[in-house]
Length: 114
Image (cartoon, rainbow, N blue to C red; front, side, top):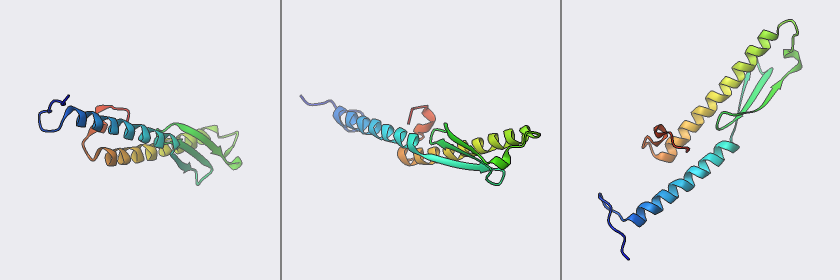
């Protein structure tokens, strides 16, 4: 049975194959973002945060010299700063790679999971 033509050219089969390829690319992209690690430091390197490509905090390292019982607020600020910087970097990488994946079609603005 011959597949109907889609307005603008192409067949339903071609459209379904393209959709399947896009789904596979989206899955690979999500796996890549899960495995990507982005690190940022604060306080001259005494606090280091590592997030994945989705911005989820994976680890946090605090150098002993950063721990001052009389100034917990400074350590808190350093932690927040390192985590936010790592998340911002991950977001930028994700957006850049998403743009490469979608070819600038603006699909990232649709709220799709890839």
